[in-house]
Length: 125
Image (cartoon, rainbow, N blue to C red):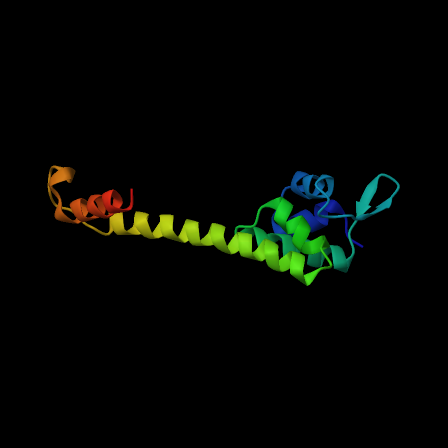
């Protein structure tokens, strides 16, 4: 059993994050009096939360993913996340295209690369 401070240090998190996740229903550490005590299963759950956050999941979806005992429910949540990720990837790709243009024109609006990005935007609008 580990204290909140030990768990926070292990994962490089402030302790208040673990308390917040508990308040949000993501963690349910045991109690010894007023003190939270984390088991190995709790540590794995913290690791799962961090992996899901890194993948861009929102806390509500992480809670559903960890608590839903239905494969169908998790699949529906994963489908929603897949669409959010595709949108983020598209925005990141557009940003990358903009900065990779390496336009040497003094007037950005005269840059052929930038003009092609504008043309694409106008076609999709």
